Image 1 (cartoon, rainbow, N blue to C red):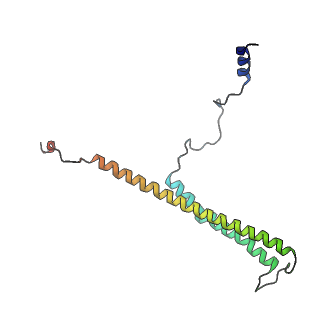
Image 2 (image 1 turned 45 degrees about the horizontal axis):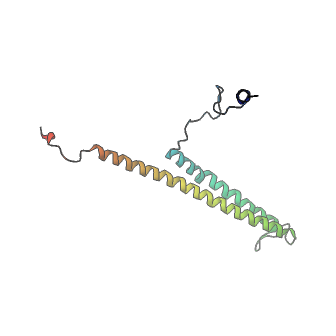
Image 3 (image 1 turned 30 degrees about the horizontal axis):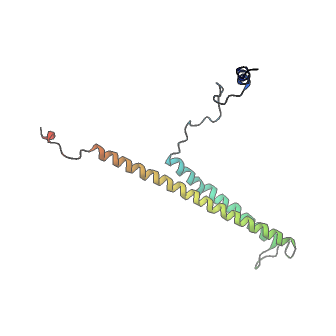
Length: 147
């Protein structure tokens, strides 16, 4: 079999990835990847008002649950106080606390970055508008203005 024959057979059955046909594709949203300053502000607001407080609330549940199980050093006696399992559960709670702190810090960082990016874009856009407005103003008075 010649190369041409082999190539034509392979190309007849080969999968082509350079088109999807006329079938509708997923998504349905905007066709671009534009993120506006208002999108960034909305995401930061969601983190600040919804996601951040929810993470704090849910993270605090582990501390409350451990107090009811193990008790507190100065207030209550828990149902497992004095058991050997406390060491293992303390270790797990310590890891949970570390992970909770990391996610809380990460959320605050993302929120601040979103607010910062929004502000930076707004300042940059205002600077560009000022620059373009200066370009439209005549630099020197023209002698033709007096005619």
